[in-house]
Amino acid sequence: MSVDDVMKSAIDRAGVIRVRNAMNPLLWLSSISAPIFLIAAYLFRDDPILKCGFAGLGCLPIVASLAAYFLYFVLDRDRLQSEEFVLKQRELSIIERKGLPPVPFDGEETEDIQMIEASEKPPRGD
Image 1 (tube, rainbow, N blue to C red):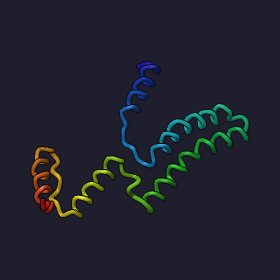
Image 2 (cartoon, rainbow, N blue to C red):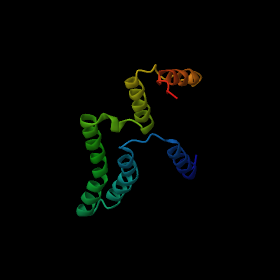
Image 3 (spheres, one colour):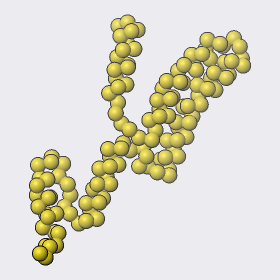
Image 4 (cartoon, rainbow, N blue to C red):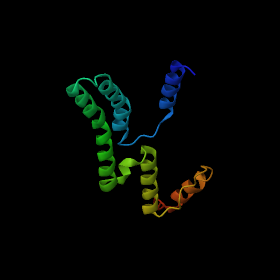
């Protein structure tokens, strides 16, 4: 397998990842910038100032990602979940507060839920 095939495969697989949470920007920054800076640190290994500077810049997004992960883990765990998961969780909590039965996962029983919702509404006096 050639280098071009590996790069094309990596780019195609990167487009498949669709989990969206608060960590995504930092993870993308880490995965793109850290290898570039670490390779630059290796290329400039003879100059100690440039080597340390590039190594520090390469490690910075990784350390920032780890710090953000543990900060979100302690303070707000919902930010580590995907947007779809958080929206579904909020939808289920709203349904639970209304006292309705749980939403079916297969989608076939939605008519029953609509009938229950309609029957719970008080009749209008015309």
